[in-house]
Length: 306
Image (cartoon, rainbow, N blue to C red; front, side):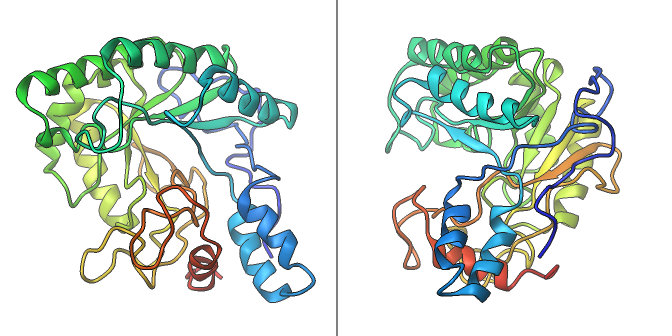
């Protein structure tokens, strides 16, 4: 089993990040000792020791914490999480996921004023403590389902959020290499406030190969004068052959979080989507966001780095 402490860099936790420096260098990200994966491993430790050891591969990696409309008091929820990380001497990776009409109106609610208030409460929860934020997965890549007015509204909300969250390093979600061309995504990022953000995030909740995302990200980063991070939590064997994105079978954990990316413009490989949480009620999975131990176990068993 790998070391329980995952270190993203060799320098001290308190090392400051400058505008030009990789903000992850010198930081240790929080590993939640009470995550579903950790609890699952503990529950299996005696009765299923081999499976418990596999689940440890998920439980011991730092992962992002997501916040959305399921948090009744988002400021309190963010504060509690950041507080736990700070008590452990760790940095936090947060995901803001509450943009209006994020799924083209199917499940999300709330309007412009609601979101502006929500993102300020989110920031209030951080309270000036060190944190990195991935901003609104799918919001830019999914613009096409909105009419022209709603597209402009969404872009204005993203710009506002980037400004509110400053000076924290913010990575605006930019989909993945199979969704839009680099030129299209660079243009959208420009309108979403990338000039005031640290950069953008790729492959969140998806399975695209790291090599492909690095090439795609390099193109966009060059066009936008920014940096990027890649979600490697579930891309160890790349995407499913048929392109299925919702709980595709046969996938695997990817590279564990670290900053040695081999690409100067890529700040880190991160586990943004927590491996083992369902994409939705498809391919035998539970509802979106529900813990699915068997899927997590399969990801760990098939990991190329085992």
